[in-house]
Length: 233
Image 1 (tube, rainbow, N blue to C red):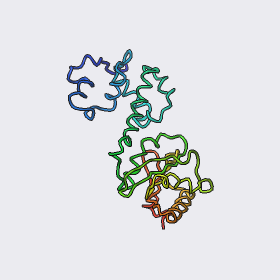
Image 2: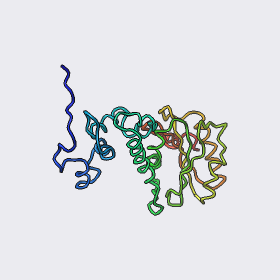
Image 3: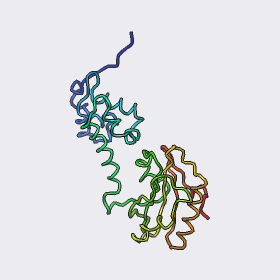
Image 4: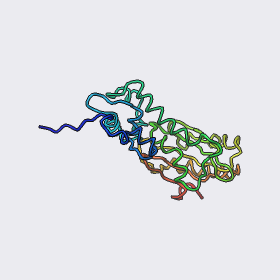
């Protein structure tokens, strides 16, 4: 006879071991991803408590990044969720995403390709089509804005270099970092990526706006064209 997984109610745990109580006592960093989801879900379903529902969701969708990528209807259809809980999960993920650039006085500074990638990788990992974004920077390499300039395939024949610099000129940015994603998950730069990089670095010199880098985002990985010497003189 197959063994069935142990099922327990959250209320069966000692009060100090319950997710909400542990969060209040030790902080959210002390909880697992499944326990944080359990707090959003509040209750489980027959045969699964809220933590076990959270574990099931993480396993099925491939972790938090998978939940972020999942279509709302996919979550809505999951056993134990429905409209309200699916909305709560999506809202919590989006709040975390928006937090990064909310406070102007806390604008992040870019000191490396990894710093730039960290600002957008969480969101761009989940995109199903290619997007190109430009990070606008001030004299201290602090982020002024992140602007989307293309959605869909952006090869060298389609990208208009002036579009990449239009917002930088308006914001008086002194430097930019261009980032786009490969929905395939492979961040290896294509010949078109190199051609676009070469064109925009040349245009940046004419406009006195430095192109610090061009990053390609893949599934959990990124490539810096500047680090690889591709398109930068």
